[in-house]
Amino acid sequence: MTTNSILEKLKTLQPIRSIYRGGGSASNLGRSLTIFNNFFLHVLPVKVRRKSIDFGATLYLGYVSFVLFGVLVITGILLMLYYRPAVPHAYHDMKDLTFVVSSGAFLRNMHRWSAHLMVVVVFLHMLRVFFAGAYKPPREFNWVIGTLLLIMTLLLSYTGYLLPWDQLAYWAVNVGANMVNATPFMGPKLKFVLLGGHGIGENALVRFYVLHCVIIPIFAVIAIGVHFWRVRKDGGIRPLFGPDSDKVESEANQKEGD
Amino acid sequence: MDKKDDKEPKFHDRRGFLSAIGVGCLGAACLGSGVLSIEYLSPNSVLEPSPRFNAGSLEKYAPGSVTEDLEHGIYLVRNRSGAIYAMSAVCTHLGCLTFYKQQENIIACPCHGSKFTGEGEVIQGPAPAPLPRYYVELNERSQLIVDKSQLVDDSFLLKV
Image (cartoon, rainbow over all chains, first blue to last red; front, top):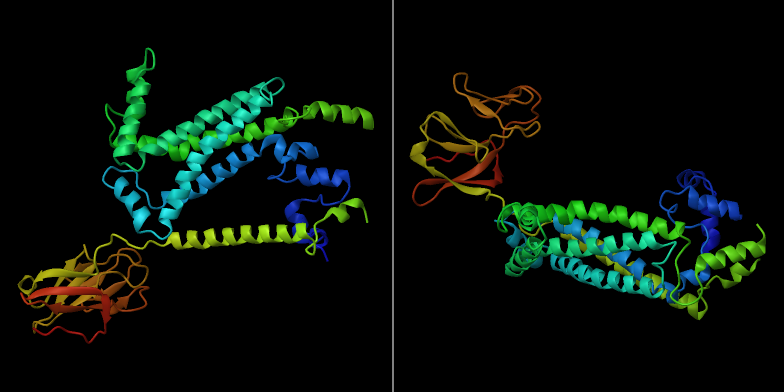
Protein backbone atom coordinates (compact mmCIF):
# COMPACT_ATOMS: atom_id res chain seq x y z
CA MET A 1 0.00 0.00 0.00
CA THR A 2 1.57 3.28 -1.09
CA THR A 3 1.46 6.58 0.78
CA ASN A 4 -0.73 8.05 -1.92
CA SER A 5 -3.41 5.39 -1.64
CA ILE A 6 -3.55 5.90 2.15
CA LEU A 7 -3.98 9.65 1.56
CA GLU A 8 -6.75 8.92 -0.97
CA LYS A 9 -8.55 6.78 1.64
CA LEU A 10 -8.23 9.52 4.26
CA LYS A 11 -9.73 12.09 1.91
CA THR A 12 -13.00 10.19 1.77
CA LEU A 13 -13.58 10.35 5.55
CA GLN A 14 -16.26 12.84 6.61
CA PRO A 15 -14.24 14.77 9.28
CA ILE A 16 -11.38 15.23 6.81
CA ARG A 17 -13.80 16.25 4.08
CA SER A 18 -15.34 18.85 6.39
CA ILE A 19 -11.89 20.35 7.04
CA TYR A 20 -10.83 20.42 3.41
CA ARG A 21 -14.22 21.52 2.00
CA GLY A 22 -14.71 19.02 -0.78
CA GLY A 23 -12.32 18.75 -3.68
CA GLY A 24 -10.18 15.68 -3.61
CA SER A 25 -11.53 14.08 -6.76
CA ALA A 26 -8.89 13.17 -9.30
CA SER A 27 -10.50 15.16 -12.13
CA ASN A 28 -9.01 18.50 -13.19
CA LEU A 29 -12.05 20.25 -11.70
CA GLY A 30 -11.54 18.43 -8.39
CA ARG A 31 -7.87 19.39 -8.28
CA SER A 32 -8.74 23.01 -9.03
CA LEU A 33 -11.41 23.03 -6.30
CA THR A 34 -8.88 21.62 -3.79
CA ILE A 35 -6.75 24.73 -4.38
CA PHE A 36 -9.59 27.27 -4.63
CA ASN A 37 -11.40 26.06 -1.51
CA ASN A 38 -8.39 25.98 0.79
CA PHE A 39 -7.44 29.17 2.62
CA PHE A 40 -3.76 28.26 2.73
CA LEU A 41 -3.48 26.92 -0.82
CA HIS A 42 -5.57 29.44 -2.71
CA VAL A 43 -2.62 31.81 -3.16
CA LEU A 44 -0.98 29.10 -5.26
CA PRO A 45 -1.71 28.52 -8.94
CA VAL A 46 -3.79 25.45 -9.86
CA LYS A 47 -1.32 24.50 -12.60
CA VAL A 48 2.37 25.22 -12.99
CA ARG A 49 4.71 24.17 -15.74
CA ARG A 50 7.26 21.63 -14.67
CA LYS A 51 9.98 23.90 -16.12
CA SER A 52 9.05 26.79 -13.84
CA ILE A 53 9.50 24.72 -10.68
CA ASP A 54 12.90 23.44 -11.80
CA PHE A 55 15.78 24.49 -9.59
CA GLY A 56 17.52 26.12 -12.57
CA ALA A 57 14.56 28.40 -13.29
CA THR A 58 14.70 30.44 -10.07
CA LEU A 59 17.48 28.83 -7.96
CA TYR A 60 14.66 28.79 -5.32
CA LEU A 61 15.95 32.12 -3.99
CA GLY A 62 12.52 33.67 -3.38
CA TYR A 63 11.36 30.53 -1.60
CA VAL A 64 14.52 30.45 0.54
CA SER A 65 13.96 34.13 1.47
CA PHE A 66 10.42 33.27 2.55
CA VAL A 67 11.56 30.28 4.62
CA LEU A 68 14.21 32.47 6.29
CA PHE A 69 11.53 35.06 7.03
CA GLY A 70 9.49 32.28 8.67
CA VAL A 71 12.51 31.16 10.74
CA LEU A 72 13.07 34.78 11.80
CA VAL A 73 9.43 35.21 12.86
CA ILE A 74 9.45 32.02 14.95
CA THR A 75 12.84 32.59 16.60
CA GLY A 76 12.01 36.29 17.03
CA ILE A 77 8.77 35.53 18.89
CA LEU A 78 10.66 33.11 21.16
CA LEU A 79 13.36 35.72 21.87
CA MET A 80 10.63 38.24 22.80
CA LEU A 81 9.70 36.00 25.75
CA TYR A 82 12.96 36.87 27.56
CA TYR A 83 13.80 40.31 26.19
CA ARG A 84 12.60 43.59 27.75
CA PRO A 85 13.18 46.69 25.62
CA ALA A 86 14.20 48.91 28.55
CA VAL A 87 17.56 50.53 29.19
CA PRO A 88 18.22 48.82 32.57
CA HIS A 89 17.25 45.35 31.26
CA ALA A 90 17.96 45.05 27.52
CA TYR A 91 21.68 44.25 27.72
CA HIS A 92 21.31 41.87 30.68
CA ASP A 93 18.36 40.08 29.08
CA MET A 94 20.48 39.56 25.96
CA LYS A 95 23.31 38.15 28.11
CA ASP A 96 20.83 35.94 30.00
CA LEU A 97 19.52 34.62 26.70
CA THR A 98 23.04 33.78 25.61
CA PHE A 99 24.34 32.17 28.79
CA VAL A 100 21.48 31.14 31.10
CA VAL A 101 18.35 30.23 29.13
CA SER A 102 18.22 26.67 27.73
CA SER A 103 18.97 26.78 23.98
CA GLY A 104 18.81 30.57 24.19
CA ALA A 105 22.19 30.92 22.51
CA PHE A 106 21.02 28.56 19.75
CA LEU A 107 17.87 30.61 19.07
CA ARG A 108 19.74 33.92 19.19
CA ASN A 109 22.35 32.68 16.75
CA MET A 110 19.67 31.21 14.52
CA HIS A 111 17.91 34.59 14.48
CA ARG A 112 21.16 36.41 13.77
CA TRP A 113 22.47 34.12 11.03
CA SER A 114 19.06 33.84 9.37
CA ALA A 115 18.89 37.64 9.32
CA HIS A 116 22.32 37.96 7.69
CA LEU A 117 21.48 35.18 5.25
CA MET A 118 18.13 36.73 4.40
CA VAL A 119 19.80 39.99 3.32
CA VAL A 120 22.17 38.01 1.10
CA VAL A 121 19.46 35.75 -0.35
CA VAL A 122 17.00 38.59 -0.99
CA PHE A 123 19.76 40.42 -2.84
CA LEU A 124 20.64 37.32 -4.89
CA HIS A 125 16.92 36.87 -5.62
CA MET A 126 16.85 40.40 -6.95
CA LEU A 127 19.87 39.66 -9.17
CA ARG A 128 18.18 36.51 -10.48
CA VAL A 129 15.02 38.48 -11.30
CA PHE A 130 17.10 41.15 -13.00
CA PHE A 131 19.08 38.75 -15.17
CA ALA A 132 15.95 36.81 -16.09
CA GLY A 133 14.42 40.10 -17.26
CA ALA A 134 11.47 39.54 -14.93
CA TYR A 135 11.28 43.24 -14.09
CA LYS A 136 9.85 43.92 -17.58
CA PRO A 137 6.12 44.22 -18.28
CA PRO A 138 3.82 42.61 -17.30
CA ARG A 139 5.77 42.09 -14.05
CA GLU A 140 7.00 45.65 -13.54
CA PHE A 141 4.82 46.34 -10.48
CA ASN A 142 5.96 43.15 -8.78
CA TRP A 143 9.53 44.40 -9.21
CA VAL A 144 8.48 47.55 -7.32
CA ILE A 145 7.01 45.45 -4.50
CA GLY A 146 10.23 43.42 -4.52
CA THR A 147 12.38 46.51 -4.04
CA LEU A 148 10.09 47.58 -1.18
CA LEU A 149 10.63 44.13 0.36
CA LEU A 150 14.41 44.55 0.01
CA ILE A 151 14.17 47.90 1.81
CA MET A 152 12.03 46.31 4.54
CA THR A 153 14.59 43.52 4.93
CA LEU A 154 17.35 46.10 5.40
CA LEU A 155 15.21 48.15 7.82
CA LEU A 156 14.47 45.01 9.86
CA SER A 157 18.21 44.37 10.07
CA TYR A 158 18.89 47.96 11.05
CA THR A 159 16.20 48.16 13.74
CA GLY A 160 17.23 44.78 15.13
CA TYR A 161 20.79 46.04 15.41
CA LEU A 162 20.01 48.33 18.37
CA LEU A 163 18.21 45.74 20.50
CA PRO A 164 21.24 44.01 22.15
CA TRP A 165 22.03 47.48 23.59
CA ASP A 166 25.79 46.99 23.59
CA GLN A 167 28.54 49.27 22.27
CA LEU A 168 28.26 47.93 18.71
CA ALA A 169 24.48 48.46 18.72
CA TYR A 170 24.69 51.95 20.16
CA TRP A 171 27.33 53.32 17.78
CA ALA A 172 25.98 51.55 14.70
CA VAL A 173 22.56 53.09 15.26
CA ASN A 174 24.23 56.41 16.04
CA VAL A 175 25.82 56.31 12.58
CA GLY A 176 22.51 55.30 10.97
CA ALA A 177 20.63 58.07 12.75
CA ASN A 178 23.16 60.61 11.48
CA MET A 179 22.59 59.30 7.97
CA VAL A 180 18.87 60.02 8.48
CA ASN A 181 19.97 63.46 9.69
CA ALA A 182 21.40 64.11 6.23
CA THR A 183 17.96 63.86 4.57
CA PRO A 184 17.37 67.10 2.63
CA PHE A 185 15.14 69.76 4.28
CA MET A 186 13.75 67.66 7.14
CA GLY A 187 16.77 65.64 8.31
CA PRO A 188 16.98 66.83 11.94
CA LYS A 189 13.19 66.52 12.35
CA LEU A 190 13.21 63.00 10.91
CA LYS A 191 16.07 61.93 13.18
CA PHE A 192 14.24 63.40 16.19
CA VAL A 193 11.08 61.43 15.34
CA LEU A 194 13.00 58.21 14.64
CA LEU A 195 14.90 58.34 17.94
CA GLY A 196 12.13 59.99 19.97
CA GLY A 197 14.73 62.40 21.32
CA HIS A 198 18.02 64.07 20.54
CA GLY A 199 20.14 61.03 21.29
CA ILE A 200 19.78 57.27 21.53
CA GLY A 201 18.02 56.57 24.81
CA GLU A 202 15.00 54.78 26.28
CA ASN A 203 12.63 56.19 23.63
CA ALA A 204 14.87 55.14 20.77
CA LEU A 205 15.13 51.59 22.15
CA VAL A 206 11.34 51.24 22.48
CA ARG A 207 10.76 52.77 19.02
CA PHE A 208 13.25 50.44 17.36
CA TYR A 209 11.72 47.47 19.22
CA VAL A 210 8.20 48.33 18.04
CA LEU A 211 9.41 48.94 14.47
CA HIS A 212 11.38 45.68 14.51
CA CYS A 213 8.74 43.42 16.09
CA VAL A 214 5.42 44.94 14.97
CA ILE A 215 5.32 47.65 12.32
CA ILE A 216 7.84 46.49 9.69
CA PRO A 217 6.88 42.77 10.01
CA ILE A 218 3.18 43.62 9.44
CA PHE A 219 4.02 45.58 6.29
CA ALA A 220 6.45 42.86 5.20
CA VAL A 221 3.79 40.12 5.57
CA ILE A 222 1.30 42.18 3.53
CA ALA A 223 3.90 42.93 0.85
CA ILE A 224 4.99 39.27 0.72
CA GLY A 225 1.35 38.23 0.24
CA VAL A 226 0.84 40.69 -2.61
CA HIS A 227 4.23 39.70 -4.09
CA PHE A 228 3.25 36.00 -4.26
CA TRP A 229 -0.21 36.78 -5.60
CA ARG A 230 1.23 39.03 -8.29
CA VAL A 231 3.66 36.30 -9.40
CA ARG A 232 0.64 34.19 -10.31
CA LYS A 233 -1.47 37.06 -11.72
CA ASP A 234 1.37 38.42 -13.85
CA GLY A 235 1.79 35.11 -15.65
CA GLY A 236 3.96 32.96 -13.41
CA ILE A 237 7.67 33.13 -12.96
CA ARG A 238 10.06 34.04 -15.73
CA PRO A 239 12.81 31.38 -15.80
CA LEU A 240 16.45 32.35 -15.77
CA PHE A 241 17.03 30.43 -19.00
CA GLY A 242 14.58 29.55 -21.75
CA PRO A 243 11.35 31.17 -22.87
CA ASP A 244 8.92 33.20 -20.77
CA SER A 245 6.38 30.91 -19.11
CA ASP A 246 3.20 32.88 -19.84
CA LYS A 247 3.96 33.01 -23.55
CA VAL A 248 4.50 29.26 -23.61
CA GLU A 249 1.32 28.79 -21.60
CA SER A 250 -0.80 30.80 -24.03
CA GLU A 251 0.72 28.95 -27.00
CA ALA A 252 -0.01 25.62 -25.36
CA ASN A 253 -3.60 26.68 -24.73
CA GLN A 254 -4.01 27.56 -28.38
CA LYS A 255 -2.72 24.15 -29.42
CA GLU A 256 -5.04 22.35 -27.02
CA GLY A 257 -7.84 24.51 -28.32
CA ASP A 258 -9.69 25.07 -25.04
CA MET B 1 -2.69 2.18 -13.76
CA ASP B 2 -1.60 5.37 -15.47
CA LYS B 3 1.91 6.67 -15.96
CA LYS B 4 1.83 8.76 -12.78
CA ASP B 5 1.88 5.75 -10.48
CA ASP B 6 4.95 4.33 -12.21
CA LYS B 7 6.86 7.50 -11.42
CA GLU B 8 5.96 7.47 -7.75
CA PRO B 9 9.13 6.72 -5.72
CA LYS B 10 9.15 3.32 -4.01
CA PHE B 11 11.18 2.49 -0.93
CA HIS B 12 13.10 -0.29 -2.64
CA ASP B 13 14.76 1.84 -5.30
CA ARG B 14 17.66 4.20 -4.76
CA ARG B 15 15.64 7.40 -5.17
CA GLY B 16 12.98 6.18 -2.71
CA PHE B 17 15.62 5.17 -0.20
CA LEU B 18 17.46 8.49 -0.41
CA SER B 19 14.29 10.55 -0.16
CA ALA B 20 13.21 8.48 2.85
CA ILE B 21 16.55 9.31 4.49
CA GLY B 22 16.07 12.99 3.59
CA VAL B 23 12.57 13.13 5.02
CA GLY B 24 13.77 11.25 8.10
CA CYS B 25 16.57 13.76 8.72
CA LEU B 26 14.14 16.64 8.23
CA GLY B 27 11.76 15.04 10.74
CA ALA B 28 14.59 14.54 13.25
CA ALA B 29 15.64 18.18 12.84
CA CYS B 30 12.04 19.38 13.38
CA LEU B 31 11.64 17.14 16.43
CA GLY B 32 14.97 18.37 17.84
CA SER B 33 14.11 22.02 17.44
CA GLY B 34 10.68 21.31 18.95
CA VAL B 35 12.32 19.77 22.03
CA LEU B 36 14.82 22.65 22.27
CA SER B 37 12.02 25.21 22.01
CA ILE B 38 10.00 23.54 24.76
CA GLU B 39 13.08 23.50 27.01
CA TYR B 40 13.62 27.17 26.18
CA LEU B 41 10.16 28.08 27.48
CA SER B 42 10.93 27.33 31.14
CA PRO B 43 13.43 29.84 32.57
CA ASN B 44 16.59 28.54 34.26
CA SER B 45 16.77 31.50 36.62
CA VAL B 46 14.05 33.81 37.90
CA LEU B 47 14.52 37.10 39.72
CA GLU B 48 11.94 36.54 42.42
CA PRO B 49 12.28 37.46 46.12
CA SER B 50 13.75 34.70 48.27
CA PRO B 51 11.19 32.62 50.19
CA ARG B 52 13.52 32.86 53.22
CA PHE B 53 13.77 36.33 54.68
CA ASN B 54 14.58 38.29 57.83
CA ALA B 55 11.44 39.66 59.54
CA GLY B 56 13.34 41.87 62.01
CA SER B 57 14.04 41.60 65.73
CA LEU B 58 11.68 39.80 68.07
CA GLU B 59 11.01 42.96 70.13
CA LYS B 60 9.00 44.40 67.24
CA TYR B 61 6.26 41.86 67.95
CA ALA B 62 4.35 42.46 71.23
CA PRO B 63 2.85 39.43 73.05
CA GLY B 64 -0.82 38.94 72.12
CA SER B 65 -0.57 40.69 68.76
CA VAL B 66 -1.06 39.89 65.06
CA THR B 67 1.30 41.81 62.74
CA GLU B 68 0.66 42.07 59.02
CA ASP B 69 3.59 41.83 56.63
CA LEU B 70 1.84 42.46 53.32
CA GLU B 71 5.09 42.66 51.36
CA HIS B 72 5.76 38.99 52.09
CA GLY B 73 2.10 38.02 52.39
CA ILE B 74 2.28 36.72 55.97
CA TYR B 75 1.04 37.44 59.50
CA LEU B 76 3.37 37.13 62.43
CA VAL B 77 1.26 36.02 65.38
CA ARG B 78 2.64 36.24 68.92
CA ASN B 79 0.44 34.78 71.66
CA ARG B 80 0.21 35.98 75.29
CA SER B 81 2.85 33.52 76.49
CA GLY B 82 5.32 35.01 74.01
CA ALA B 83 5.50 32.11 71.52
CA ILE B 84 5.44 33.19 67.88
CA TYR B 85 4.49 31.69 64.52
CA ALA B 86 4.25 32.84 60.90
CA MET B 87 1.01 32.33 59.01
CA SER B 88 0.16 32.85 55.36
CA ALA B 89 -1.94 35.94 54.58
CA VAL B 90 -3.06 34.42 51.26
CA CYS B 91 -6.63 33.14 51.31
CA THR B 92 -6.88 29.37 50.79
CA HIS B 93 -9.87 29.87 48.47
CA LEU B 94 -8.42 31.59 45.35
CA GLY B 95 -5.29 33.34 46.50
CA CYS B 96 -6.39 36.90 47.44
CA LEU B 97 -4.44 38.77 50.09
CA THR B 98 -6.43 38.89 53.35
CA PHE B 99 -6.40 41.64 56.00
CA TYR B 100 -6.56 41.61 59.80
CA LYS B 101 -9.43 43.32 61.69
CA GLN B 102 -8.03 44.14 65.11
CA GLN B 103 -11.34 45.01 66.90
CA GLU B 104 -12.97 41.66 66.07
CA ASN B 105 -9.65 39.70 66.01
CA ILE B 106 -10.56 38.12 62.67
CA ILE B 107 -8.82 37.80 59.33
CA ALA B 108 -11.07 38.63 56.36
CA CYS B 109 -10.71 38.14 52.64
CA PRO B 110 -12.01 40.99 50.44
CA CYS B 111 -12.63 38.85 47.37
CA HIS B 112 -15.30 36.28 48.33
CA GLY B 113 -15.98 37.03 52.01
CA SER B 114 -14.04 34.24 53.73
CA LYS B 115 -13.33 34.90 57.41
CA PHE B 116 -10.69 33.33 59.62
CA THR B 117 -9.97 33.57 63.34
CA GLY B 118 -6.79 35.28 64.50
CA GLU B 119 -5.27 31.76 64.58
CA GLY B 120 -6.21 31.09 60.96
CA GLU B 121 -9.22 28.75 61.46
CA VAL B 122 -12.03 29.17 58.91
CA ILE B 123 -15.14 30.83 60.39
CA GLN B 124 -17.22 31.39 57.26
CA GLY B 125 -17.05 31.70 53.52
CA PRO B 126 -15.77 29.49 50.73
CA ALA B 127 -12.22 28.99 52.06
CA PRO B 128 -11.67 25.18 52.17
CA ALA B 129 -8.75 25.10 54.63
CA PRO B 130 -7.21 27.09 57.47
CA LEU B 131 -4.35 29.48 56.71
CA PRO B 132 -1.10 27.46 56.56
CA ARG B 133 1.90 28.20 58.77
CA TYR B 134 5.54 28.65 57.79
CA TYR B 135 8.70 27.63 59.55
CA VAL B 136 10.34 30.37 61.69
CA GLU B 137 13.57 30.42 63.66
CA LEU B 138 15.72 32.94 65.50
CA ASN B 139 19.16 33.84 64.28
CA GLU B 140 22.11 34.58 66.60
CA ARG B 141 21.03 38.23 66.96
CA SER B 142 17.44 37.24 68.00
CA GLN B 143 15.99 38.21 64.66
CA LEU B 144 13.13 36.22 63.16
CA ILE B 145 13.93 34.24 60.01
CA VAL B 146 10.83 33.11 58.09
CA ASP B 147 11.06 30.37 55.48
CA LYS B 148 8.02 30.36 53.18
CA SER B 149 9.31 27.31 51.34
CA GLN B 150 8.75 25.16 54.48
CA LEU B 151 5.19 24.52 55.56
CA VAL B 152 4.67 23.38 59.16
CA ASP B 153 1.59 21.99 60.91
CA ASP B 154 -0.77 24.01 63.11
CA SER B 155 0.91 22.90 66.34
CA PHE B 156 4.16 24.64 65.38
CA LEU B 157 5.12 27.39 67.84
CA LEU B 158 8.48 29.07 68.29
CA LYS B 159 8.81 29.31 72.07
CA VAL B 160 11.09 32.17 73.12
